[in-house]
Length: 139
Image (cartoon, rainbow, N blue to C red; front, side, top):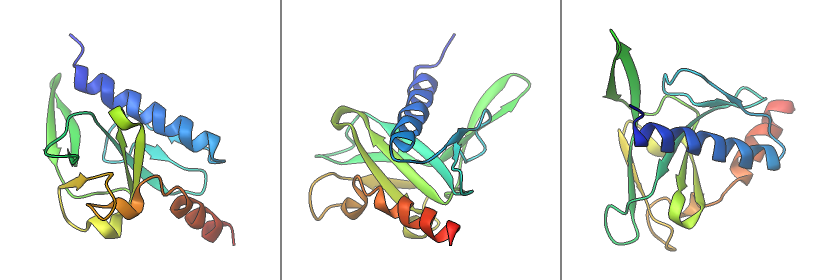
């Protein structure tokens, strides 16, 4: 039986990858979830999280977890962000939060809010942060 959250997660990876392609990046999708979902052409790593249910008024919460398989059984292990960036796709609003690892620190989850002045709002659809990373990698 296919787990719906796995399907949504995989859809998010492809949705973010397509957005990156349209913005001039060449993302590679990893086949194994080890805390990194995408590797960009300049070596930058990305963890993608997709969210559709509000945790509270206009806020969405995502847990940073990695899948582990043992003897055919999948478990989720919470951990701090391993990738260079976390990209959260808020499905109902088709919005993206592009958050650098240093802004998340050792937290095992983040709460994003698309309203001005709220949680991680400065990273809402802030694709230029990845372009700056790319330009820094090529100089």
